[in-house]
Length: 65
Image (tube, rainbow, N blue to C red; front, side, top):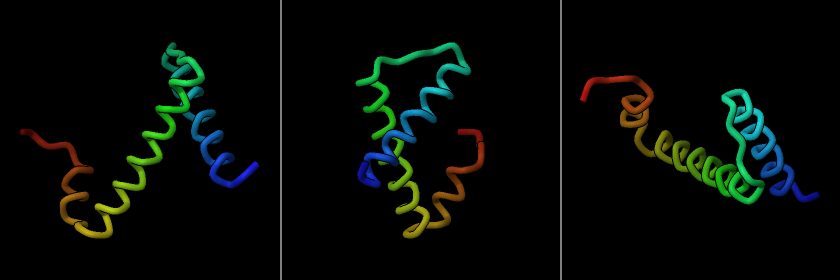
């Protein structure tokens, strides 16, 4: 299995376990979409952290709007 496929499968297993802890379950196709979206969000967050550490730090803390 290619590294990207292994990483995707690992994300899917992690998300499935997390959802089951909360009594939720997804169809495999939806789980794959969610895992892919989570990976993209992680990459985007890292991009923001590198380009603008102040804004990401602000986003990591709860605040009143």
